[in-house]
Image (cartoon, rainbow, N blue to C red; front, side, top):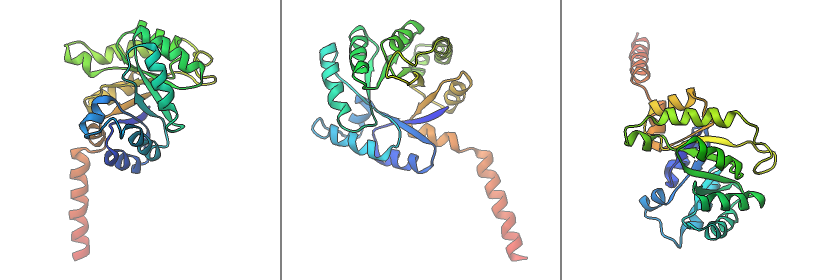
Length: 226
């Protein structure tokens, strides 16, 4: 499973990239607003993210009509070659995804919650599909179970020639809230997990690791003083 970081914060992206395990970045309007982003600075900010990431960078449209989504998608794709246009899983989004995919522009279909939505997204030519885990948990449903169903359904078929030629659709486990979500996403076979920086840090840290290092350091100090 590959790791994407779910943020618009350049400092977080730079730090995560330095670990050597980062495969891409996902953003959305909420994440951009949290860093105090402005409309005028949005293209330049996405360009900076693309320079920090060697992998795909999902930049989300805000239009709801297919014509607006297509127009926004084309503009976003011009920012950098690794931009992936993030489109909501709606009827208008499906139509726009088909048009963008036919132009060779990769799309990440977001706000996906069900198997039928995921299959339709793949059929429309999406390069990535992002089922949301945590938002299911928020309404007392099992987000990982829904993710598992989507992964199994998508893996039943070969999508190589449906979207961008030669590329297979990948499932991104999104709305990840905990290390347990990451573990479960890997166990059900998600291709990618896009993870907030705070959760990504927790994936590395463990109290037994910390305690072990402290014990080694204490023992080595005895050696140096012997």
